[in-house]
Image (cartoon, rainbow, N blue to C red):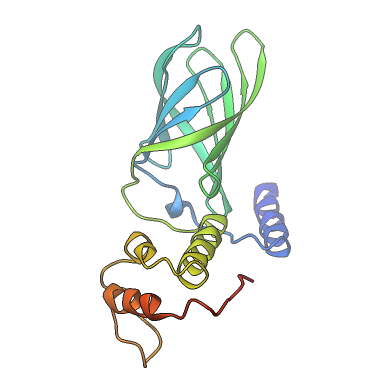
Length: 195
């Protein structure tokens, strides 16, 4: 019973903080990534919502193991992932896919406690696309609007928009080529500012 109350309290806090509460099926199963911590690198493969494989690639902690995990989604592509290793070491990670970081807290079998933050490099995408990354999405929209309407950079259209881009203005033709033509035809004297 206390766990249900804790989950409810977490959801209420998340709503007040503007965090989108998300289901466990947003956990990026299948993703493979390298995590670069200050003193070593770890390869992680999320095998399911209940198992992951890790490989510490160098140093005195070097080893590979498949572990049972507990995953708690916090919202906005942030998950708490915890496990215990065969040698008794315990790990609790906060995976922040929006910012590309993992905050790791580990108690090693010899009693040492480590706190580390590492950057994520995805080496294989997840089995299913998920997109609940507001910081990344805001940055992408700002880059698109600034590139097109402040810098008049028509080449950004190919980098930032899909070929079959859907235009929501009924007076503008559909597709990336139409958007590129509009940007190329904009006068160079007008100016807009990002909000």
